[in-house]
Length: 161
Length: 267
Image 1 (cartoon, chains in turn orange, green):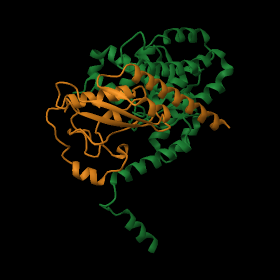
Image 2: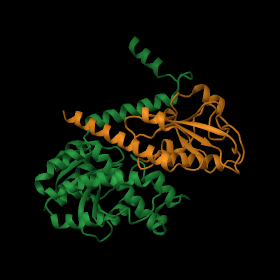
Image 3: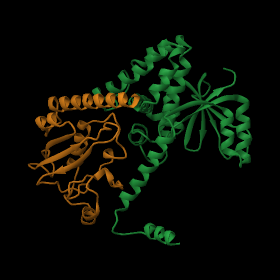
Image 4: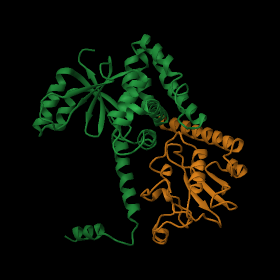
């Protein structure tokens, strides 16, 4: 009985938190970011976010899609975030299967971060890129990795790239 | 015989298998075992319960002996990397149950702690979520000594307990950033205080060091005495008070990598 109650409490908190995040992302999206609100309303655990390459960067004029998956333990578990669709940005921290090597998505995730913070980090990661290329281990990684990027033990390279 | 050969086969490195998967599977198995066997906050036990852990170890036996002159009981916490924050929160709030005057003061300074302070760069609504749940737990203390069971239950419900841990981590991070110049001296290598906060303070499950303890105890103005039980020669268990010279409200036992709660004999 006790655990049932606790489970229920967690479920309503989970929903309230994601609803708040969705509202905030729809009302005040970071520049170039747009969440598919209808899809998220129907299934709060799976969101698609559209992202435009910022002006004056190597990705200007390009459009990308990000997928966010939220486990029942969100926000204590980080969201699972990948690029999806036909255009995966060519970037030293983005694998051609859409997986992203970014520390706040695993080791440095804090429950006080949000979808919005993740979007901002990804925009800034793309914007600071000086040369479009894939990670050096791309072909090996893409062949051997798990479908879920959170199951990779990431070795974070230089975050400033 | 055939059994052991089979096991050897299974343990061989197989390049076709995903090693990351195996490592993570093992981590999860260990985490599951820990969470099934050790409560987030345990029951109060007589200090002598520590003795049985060290029956073959003279150095530690002497130290337990020394501890038992000063403390009467111990409360174990789950070793999940959050133990300092969780132990601190429980021990302090428990001590306030029969000190309502102090509680009123604490509640007052609490209400505005992060909001009035540093901008941590987190969205306001996530901060509010953690603050509100933290205050829900804190307010239980207002019911006085009879609320001890309720406090214990809340701390063993991760839906509350983990919110408290996150909030204290944010308070510690705010303190570190507010006095970044001072705390920079404690950080090894060339990491900035901000990076340190993002990597070692704000995320869950990251273990606490002196710097976390100094930051949190200074931010809340709550004195912590940590008893260090290690392999050092002295038969006495060394104590450190944070912040130095403060009135001690929380007593913790440190054994490498882990904090539990201690209760002094006099109180």
